[in-house]
Image (cartoon, rainbow, N blue to C red; front, side, top):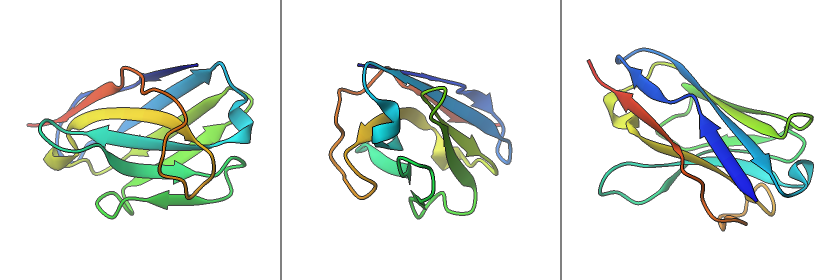
Length: 120
């Protein structure tokens, strides 16, 4: 199983980024997918989740109204559109598969993640 996250970078406050995660090694369409992030010295936290069919989504309180999660099961990919970025969004962003939309235990080991830095 492999997760390859990409799309991170340095962006000014108020800017936007679109993260991508391409998964392999399992039946992608059978599982919910989530984005998590981890800032230096902090616990990994949930950013957004999407059900296996894409019909249901949920977001962490700090990103509601600014971030949008989506998926393309034909491409084994999940995306995170991030708008109105704030310095506190600075973190390494990871994706993983979950047994269902409400599960909190990831099914697989975490990938390398992609660094997002919001700074002027």
